[in-house]
Length: 523
Image 1: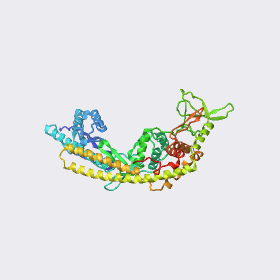
Image 2: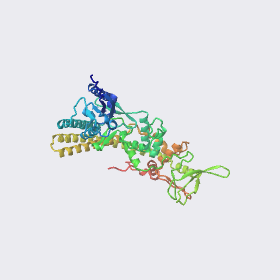
Image 3: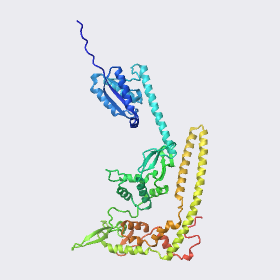
Image 4: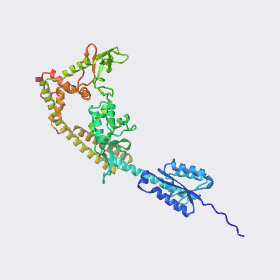
């Protein structure tokens, strides 16, 4: 009688697939096509696919979630002597050391590696051939990286930002040669422009004020739990050169370069912001300033120089009285208060005294108008000179590039490259200077009408009920906080430059004003 042969268990296998980025998954079918190829190979060889493992990471990376899971599975099913199928060697690894490490881990647990596109053998020639294929993959990765970096540098050199879009911008794809370009996102861009310009002009005296302004705008993207903008983000916004229409990447040898996107502020405004970040504010707006105490945080104590605080005091009858006082523990004036009406009354008297008489104001207007005219003529001459310098720089750059192309010395080529970078940086700075000197096309009357109204009587603005307007008056009239002494009262403060000029006109004999005006000579 013929014996029945026992049934042979079908060989089990696992599939490993990999792509380098999520973009390949979203825009193509890289993982699915690899899996289909591997399943076809398994079917041809009578294998049963037990599991599929995948990674979305570069082939040069050794630490991968998918391969770790694969090795754990192989260890768990060591007794089954599984087959690991990959579509091609570059899907397995694109680095010789990574390939060797993964291959050793697979062999160590009794599994073997197979592929529909290459044969894995243990002889020296096959091992060398496989590693050579991995090396070619590694070379391709390196070349791709170099090409990518070259494209990035070329885009930056021509003024196109290539990294993550900053707040207020997004990328928009356009036709060649522009490609992807930064464009404004509204209303975020307008809100941010207002914040940046506000900090530059002194409307916002501190980063805290900028933060509160941005927090108050529901349309502006928040960082922390969607309710506020972090302080470090505020700092980043204030120091981001892209908002001024320029870019710079020293680590890639990209000097200050005019960008191709629409700026939110001028380069001059950006420089003012950087200067203000390095200096201290005169009278920063505080979150706890009440409309009932507009001088809080501005008037200082004569005993210690620290700013007076404010409070309400309640009498035995329950009536409340407003006071300003110093609370610095080491001050001789600590706890000694002055009534709000007395202090603010003295301040209003002081503010009224700033008002110039009609004759002085008329002379001041003529002086300012004359200075405006002379400034315009000077600016036109400077702009012409700077444009001439730009033409010289372009000519110098062309000559240096020509010499660089002709030289055979690497040292000279590097020196020429450094010189071109230096000239490009100088050109960008010169262009920025032109932007800073651009003179308004509107007339003096259009530009200074409101300013002259304010200079004629700042107390008129102070009389209004708005606490915000009162804080603006403090910043525009006084160059430093006003000191209060309990015996002498408010001491004479330092005023800002326009009021200093008007005060000077009051004190001099107007007949002695020289023909060239009050401005110092520059020749």
